Image: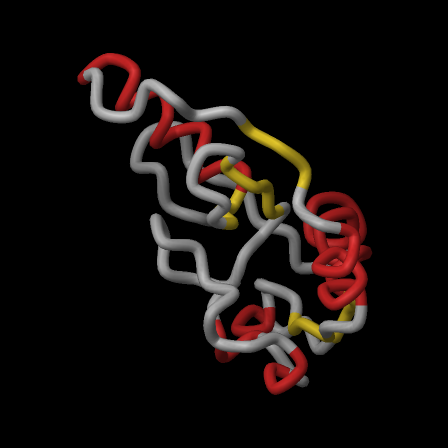
Length: 117
């Protein structure tokens, strides 16, 4: 989640940024080996890449601490379709459901050029 989408960004410290994508954590998980938090999608992609290159053999995914999940549940985020006209601001917990199924400004990805439409 890019910082500019977060309404009350002061509630989430700057150190809660994924080291892979450099955005605020989305669906965070914890690496049991290094104890860093990552976006779940980022760490899974990175792990697959590293597995093939033997760079990160000790990875074991764990759920992020409940205290962190609680902190995230208070974050208010603008819908990703704001530039298309959506004015909704949602909690972290309800954002994914809204953006995937409920937003009236839903976008799809073109299978040819991979651009949103």
